[in-house]
Image 1 (cartoon, rainbow, N blue to C red):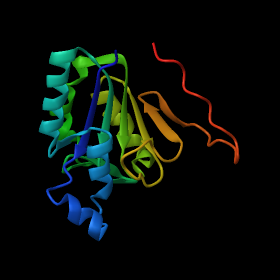
Image 2: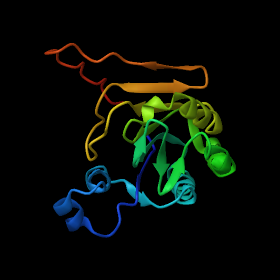
Image 3: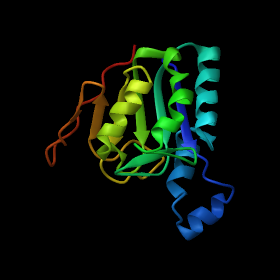
Image 4: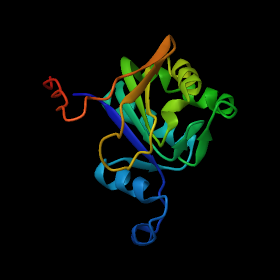
Length: 176
């Protein structure tokens, strides 16, 4: 069975008010409730969750980081990850590289963060060369991703084409 880590930027304490006012934390609440993501506030929290999960279940196959983002970066908890801030988190983030399986994928479920391909490439290098997946459009939270993914590795990046209008997507492969 695959070992997964799902985290979300802490949406705060006001669940009902978020929905009533339609504030920007609604997608975070949806990720917390429907994806079962662990709420985190810092990169330290993220590292702790990854190391704890690996210690209990084994090497990690998949990480999903849910949070706010834009075309220059994303959040891990309330910590902003951009080209200018990444070096300050490098040492902490590198501690999880040894607990990631070689084929591990890290999904950044944050609005428009997939446009930050150089940031994703550097993030991949810190994590041992794993694939980093992001998206070019706003994400709605709670369900699957919105838009074709952008996949970045140390060797480059690619974007899968969108399915043709009116076509049905391929079914996923059977689980092992």
